[in-house]
Length: 167
Image 1 (cartoon, rainbow, N blue to C red):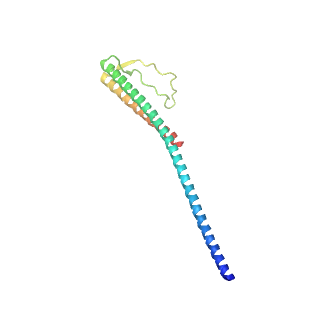
Image 2: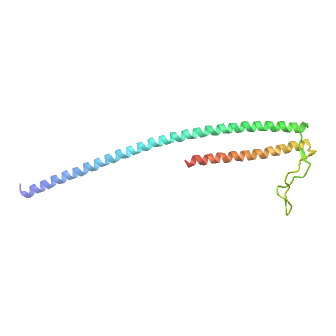
Image 3: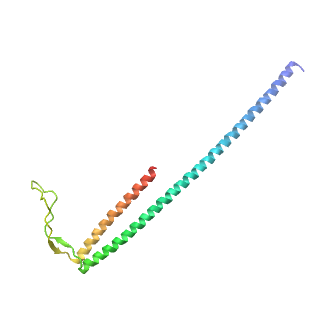
């Protein structure tokens, strides 16, 4: 064998060894990348499950609080309706009466250059309202109070939702 043949064989052997080393390193790097990717996916799944459990617990607690508040509000609404019906029944029967004011209602501030009165006039006994009209007035007042109460509940629920979403 000549020196040239030995050099060619050595070069070929070196090239095969280098190609084998590159292929081995590439395979090893791919395995390491896949292992890291799988580890990251598993860690992400565990964190997602942990966050989902915490969110479910928070949601369950909030739903229980809202259900309790709604039950309390319903109970108050039923009690209020019962009291209103009793008041209307007493007014219709004549047991209780609503009266018109005997004196005109004074404005809080005097118009123009007149001074405001220092004390309101004492309201005397004015004429009684017709019982059916008095019952209607009580019903109208109850309807207005109900609207105000429902609006306050909506605002409260909105503020609570905003606070939960801000976390």
